[in-house]
Image (cartoon, rainbow, N blue to C red):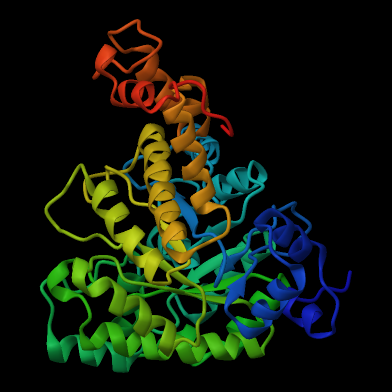
Length: 438
């Protein structure tokens, strides 16, 4: 079977079905979507191995998307648990999911997850390469260049739609890191693996050094590359330093090279960033990468919230999205503490979707504000069922409503017969409950 990438097909003037589907889902003109994909400002991650993938567009002018990370660790290995997490993420309406497994039979787990998933599915191949090197030789750095590229081929052939690859983490970037210094050095797991390999072997990053070879592999199965930020800041004090920006400049060049080779590319952004620096971080990233879709982890706006980092990430995610970030990687309450449970996953997706929606209102995305107007009308009408159905999490909204102490149908349990809307509506001559358009 002859294969080509979506970008290469678009360059011939033909629009592939997955792009048409993504445009329909998004409610945008398919020709405009195709034009932005060719500009490199939008991606539609969907491999061409034959696996059914829902068309999902990420980038400029589109609804802010959300990703959920799942996966095993060496301390917790259960295929059933990861399938439960996948189900929780999909039920909470995540747009994409990534498998970050590092424990157990990683290949078997990934294959099972992929077969159960119709939304775009991502991985970080260096994780599995490192696990195999450790199991084979007792050391995480006991692998060569061919091991790394073979792992990319394996993931691509099994139906992965997008991959995080830390190709911009060069020796020059490490020099900047060492020269300037940081409190937390490197917090990216993939970035740490890559740096350890480079320093142990005294070699340049093979993904950077052989980027054309990497693109050839990705193009065969039309895998979108997510250019990883191996030096993303792990605390506020490390944000926006020379090492971070040096890597970002390289990522911009690599994104251009990928697009020219017919491979879709997006850029991964910072993790911990002070509130006042988020907008400038987003704008610099967009400027240096030609407007490529920006995928941010949070950003987390404070370092002091273990157990509440889904909240700190949502605050930063809303600001980042409003400033132009296109894609939010969720953070759960378990961040910095342990692997998330399925309930953590569900809550993390919901909170990240709230941040994305707030950003969409700020960006003027069609339909975003209309959702809130419908909710306002339902509240004015004291339409409890309407409010529940319009909420971003109807399950939780219904549980709270049905668990309230008051049995009143005209007010909430906080206000009861002193409901502000009921009282004022009566005096304005329009009774609550008689508002149309809900």
